[in-house]
Length: 158
Image (cartoon, rainbow, N blue to C red; front, side):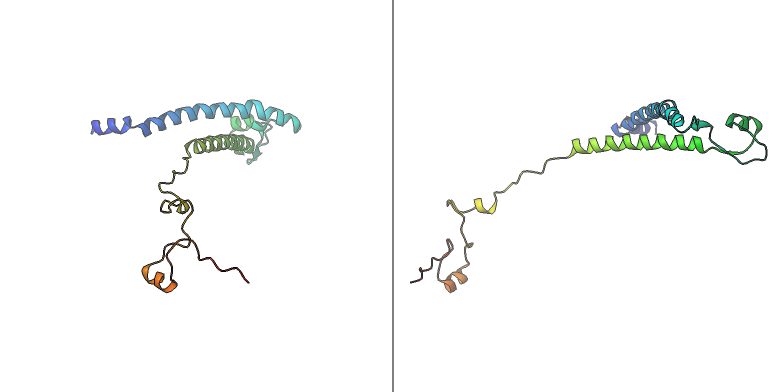
């Protein structure tokens, strides 16, 4: 059983997944800092010096001014500022993942396979131009009175 587990872990896909999870966790922290420390403060400043991390709705009876006071007093709150922060983080992460998947898909697209046979106009029996109409079966040859090859020439009108 231990050998099977070791073989499972040693597979390339599992190792790739582990590396992806570790890098994704680190990237998530970077995006979280970007949103909380870089994007939200100027946005809050533009909207009238609002601190998004402190936006909440008091669901209790005791009046509180800040989220920290509400948590210290045990007052139930609806923290929509934290939700907005998480939502913006998610949108940024989703956009980055979209760009990565799009780039990988462009790199992994294969060129269409080269044709293995010649096109029909190059398959004529050694002649410079294609046989038109295609060769007739023996019964049709007798009915039409001609071999395959070029179409019959008609006499010019007199």
